[in-house]
Length: 395
Image (cartoon, rainbow, N blue to C red):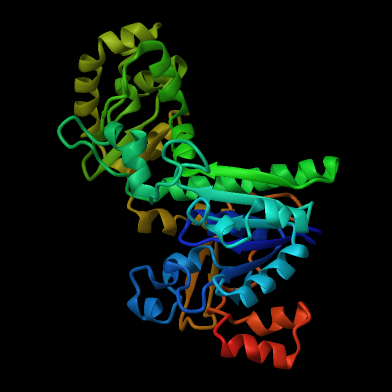
């Protein structure tokens, strides 16, 4: 069945994680994605990851993560000949995604105003650290710097170990996901207006959305969220040691906490008001610490889940990936090998599925510039013109 974005062409002029992930998500849904990189200074993710053989080959695991379903074109946009290739490409495109410093593409003559005049239906998405304007607009950052700026680090960890960075680049991937959502919305809007759009997506804005409930709470109380580690204001919604590891309890609402205490043989501990749960938190936590030590984490997970109480053993990532549930969900796609990659690897696909025509990996990540000549030929460059571009290092 036809996927949602078949027939849509996306120019992916982004690097690192957030921008490439946004384009990747639409590529999974059928869009043709052409990744544009400098021939001598490509996407730094190509050299990033724990496998140094892959890094040296320009196929680092950070790149592989969101490199599938894309063609690879090299262009040195500081050269006019390369910018002409870029303009030809954009004239035939539906979407351009870039994540360079604000103003950089305008300085090269390929900003929104110039390219939308060339292609009025173009959706031009700029992803940056702080946005295209405002007092911080010209500043740069990565995921961990935005964590520091946004307040996420300040409310992560424990009172004793704080501030603390998240253990995964969550803002990068949340920004990529938000970018895919914004692009999808703009493409849908274009069906109604027949006009293109400019999208201004900032990592800081995404980080604040990730703390939306904290933002609203602060607006009422004036108090910032404080680090609580693995604890919650409700004792029944916290983590506890067991015989062999940690179990995270998720008895959040009144119904669930009543089921939890009943299952544990302590129905008298159940409360009818959340205020009482908070007031008696210390007593509840002490009881739970004692009870949880009587079984293993796996035993508690099975016991409580069978009684409709959210609970899970705290797992390492390798344990989570080995869970048959993830295989059943089709969360990752496994390659036996790929050009430039000897041996198997797996990449995440998407966090959702469709009944028909959903996300799918069709092609492995490409080595740098692997499709340059084919794309140039499609754009009307003959053998001599392509050779001239190569000789000048424009491509």
